[in-house]
Image 1 (cartoon, one colour):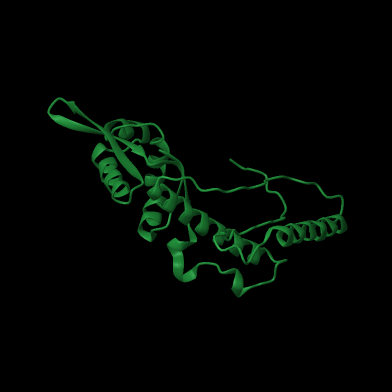
Image 2 (cartoon, rainbow, N blue to C red):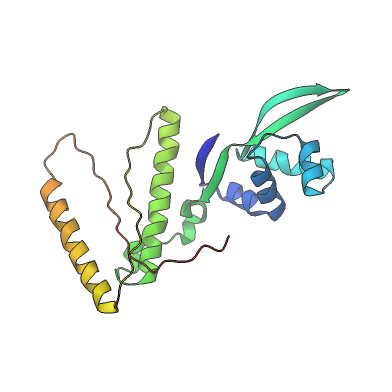
Length: 195
């Protein structure tokens, strides 16, 4: 089971967003049969089986074992990932594009950049999984409390200068076997988790 899977297929995204199927995906972090799931979610086994077959067809759940139980073969299923992220690729015709609104101070531009990040890293994860390799990435996640809007603006300016200096120092356009990397730095107000 993967830790995080990125859903790129529109039909798989639609299947995962159905409330019953989303609940089954959550329950299938631990292996279970349709009968076991039916008891947990309060639905008939046949209905659970129908939803499991749909999720399986989209690669969101997988059979990990088949057991003989009386006259029936019981399929033990498990989610293919502990959590899922839907890539903007699933809605390609309306996918956000940072180039359409290049105002770097707007929330819309930040969201478009974040969508591109999900799309790109999702594609890298999928490619790496097929090649049985790992993706080399790096991220920093921190919180800072500013005393004023002026402090926030000064921080953003200083951060931009530091990143520009580092990019200038290490960027080598002439590196024949070099590989381009994208750098995303974002500053936005924190949200309190409501789980």
